[in-house]
Image (cartoon, rainbow, N blue to C red):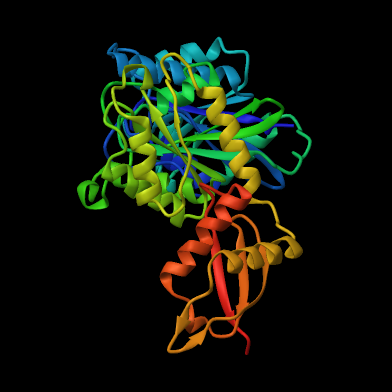
Length: 431
């Protein structure tokens, strides 16, 4: 059973994302003094008095704007309202009642769900009477709140839970989390929409359109998946001090929460040095990785050359697959490979099998000799999953050379199909 959804909607720069963070007790939503930061709808889990629900943060809606991006933001807000069990219209109490608020209220009055009005930016209890102006919206008693100070947030949460129907406690989530990461404008959002089969996130030719890590839950061939679209990753020094810096932090955090990171690259450019840097970031986060060459319908690069460079540059040796978000070619194969990688990331190899592997390895290539003494390997075991972690007990780990350790790791990947899966191998002395 999924959690009930509460759509947080309103005019631009009224403090919706700040309010979502206040109510949920998180910093999930990107907040910046610049207007129009939020564009896609982002779901953040919230709990109040034992009741759990999802707050759906949306972009600011100004119906007077009619450019492509503004229309896309309006469509995302409309879908959030359609999927929600309750809507909260956030207004700016300091600015007073504006025509944009009245236009949104008119839309919400016709929605088949209850609506609450949150008069935000009431940072002083003496300013609470200012909220009374919003009775004119015809949506009932407005709740005076301060997203920055916390004033009235408990009252708003009480009103929200009173309006929501009791929902059964959701079962333990065993969904596979797939994060779509990559440079700006390589087609991550287009690929997510191609997988989902609808315009779940806003797609634009303007680089940097996505600014949040957006979760989308789907079922594919009987498996529950959570797809995470992320903002384009740049070097931190290039985005320091801008709103893109906070979006980048959330993209990096999304990789840390994922089982598999799908590193989306532009096939017309091949795998670039920046793509390698992003793949290394995913590897350090402990998730499995796949290289997805998007825009394959317009590519003119050599796939074999890309695969050879990936195997040479990336220690994890992730699989390289081609895909086209435009034609959806290769999408199903990409998902099947990602699910298989997630499964291998949490598998445990029996100790007896690992010891047979260790014996075969030593028969193929002797352990190194350092200062006249040969390294002796006693046994090998796996003691952790997600990512897999192994311990090899030996005579003296100081005799383990870098070259031989890489040889062992590569053979381990080949034998058990662990290409793309991060491995941790600990050498432990006999003592």
